[in-house]
Amino acid sequence: MTSEVVAAAPVPVPGRAQRVREIAGELRGLRGALIPILHAVQEELGYVAQDDVAVIADVLNLSVAEVHGVVTFYKDFRRAAPGRTTVAVCQAEACRAVGAVELADYARLRTGCGFGETSADGRFTLDEVFCFGNCALGPAVQVGEKLHGRVSPARLDALLGEAR
View 1: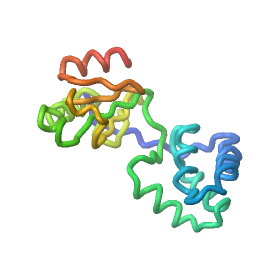
View 2: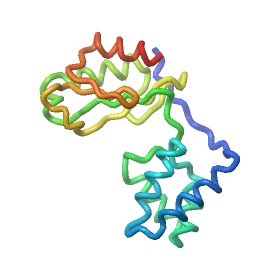
View 3: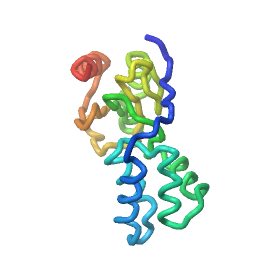
């Protein structure tokens, strides 16, 4: 497989800015509203686009640099659309002790992308997570919304095949 990464071109989505403004307006009264707003935008729209940053900054009366700094500091926030299926491999110590490093290498090979990247065909986004709380069943992998334990390379192939 190729290790090309899809560079998501910023494509304005009709109505996106308005929806981001609505989300930010609904949540701006919360204490420390920025992070809940970013999570809500990502939950509903899939990622936090650069254009979203300016809208959120305007609603919260913050600088674009302040909002951008938070988005880029926390790995949980995506700045581009994810692939159709997100695959997250636990890299916490308990999982690493039972093969998560090797499994991550295998996942990179099979998806054609590294952690934080999306495959060239747009099928997969590969992420690393530092503990799913599934330590007794490591190595743990989440495919889409479903968590799996004791994942071997063969099982990962099966999970990726189901996701295709």
